[in-house]
Image 1 (cartoon, each protein chain N blue to C red):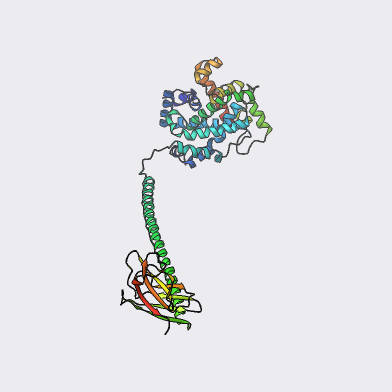
Image 2: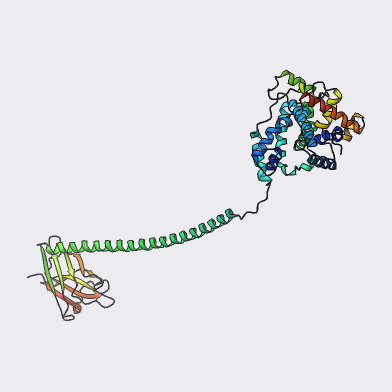
Length: 264
Length: 176
């Protein structure tokens, strides 16, 4: 092959211009690889073109590479140059984290439910305790009231003894004539049968005149034992009879349980 | 680092290699576009587009198709010619000069040429009109040998030899 003649043909200038066919291109490439003289000539022709084209830009300056970069990096995502088949650890970790989070959430939900139940139970207990406390406070107040009255020097203690229908029965009446009140202690009375209540009477003896002081409802071990009642009478004795529910106008003397005089 | 290594790295997705290639050829590609469009602002915009396209199509280049510069040249002149045919450009440029490089020469002479490059007037010194014509068709318009032969009404062989003589004049001007 006559290298100089080949070069002189002008084919290398057309090669650099990109005007050759594919097969001609390949032929030039092979020749250039084989003959350094041809390679050198191609590079010189290209240099001439580089001078011409650069000079053609005149006073214009090419855009900064940075103005191409944003577009370039965007396109990198769109067209991956090397498709990668890596294990998607990120995905696994993500799912594991999601699962862990879900289980955790469920656990916290259960914990929360348990705590709320505990709070409900505790609230109920507190309410029960509060009720108990206020019941006790009431009881203490009542007891203190009674105690105060018992300790008052103006209070007269009247013992009521058991009568024919209930010889074992007894009761006590604490009578304060200043405050005109009586406290009846029914501890010694048997529980009244269904449909009956005890009724307390103030008695004057000459002539025998009974005046009802009140009905003692719900007497018993589980019920009331102390009754506070007003008494404005000049009582000479107190009697307790068993009467039908709600009490009677006049005492049923056959059912007189206890009786006691105020005189010492 | 030699150009072939740079090209390989660029094809493997190296932005640094791409930047070096841009430093090497960016100004040339801008020059090609400027000769075709004769519009400085649009030339810079198209130059950006061309290099984005070059990056996106990096895998398509292959040495059996020709020189890397030739590949760039082809993409650039296609983009510039497309722009030239677009409506917006036609409206802006109603009086296109047919004098090859003349407009560019005038612009360049008006400004001070940069120190690191040879001026266009020096590169084209002593070049006849028929040389400017054939270089313009082959390198800036991407005509094939046959198309040049038909356009200028000269034999195929004459296209090759005339072009070689014209390039030889440029090489002489640039001491190549």
